[in-house]
Image (cartoon, rainbow, N blue to C red):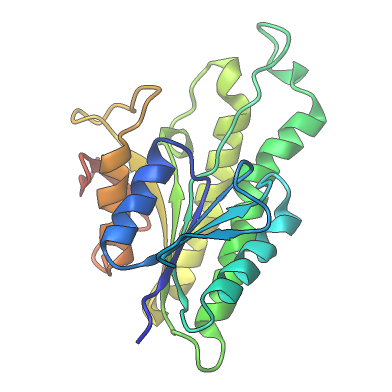
Length: 233
């Protein structure tokens, strides 16, 4: 049987790179997605990794990533989707969160709510089609903003977007988890439960995400973790 595919949307030098490396070491075929990837998609010499270019603030580009993976590996199925792409738009007028342009708010919502929703839908279609895997895992890189409102204007679009994504991720997991399809919102914390600094732990995310992908049936949809291990706060 061909190895499963892990799709990593948002493959930056920190979390994205570490997650991709961890899944490759676990035997997955890995497709990484970023705006800086080559076009057309580039397959590695060993045939195990694929780099795909896409602007993830454009939800209509998401289905093309799935098509690229299917074209590169027609004998494999998508087993896990990780949405790691994120961004924020600070308000141009200090002290006025409403000065964020409407188009900038819409772009951030597309990047962190709409586009991952489309990706989850594409994966769900593959997992539930006749002859499909019948199971799968979607993981959203989250943060504490889904639970806590922080009175700092620069984080407004990030907080709104993460909160919005957390809602549909939790809802999807409630509906489909009994069918073997899981949706996780992953929130890394410090040991005391406080939010992470501006630099989250790359290896911590990689360890946690692989565990989720390999069948963490006992864990809730909203996963808080420290050093790669689930910790309830």
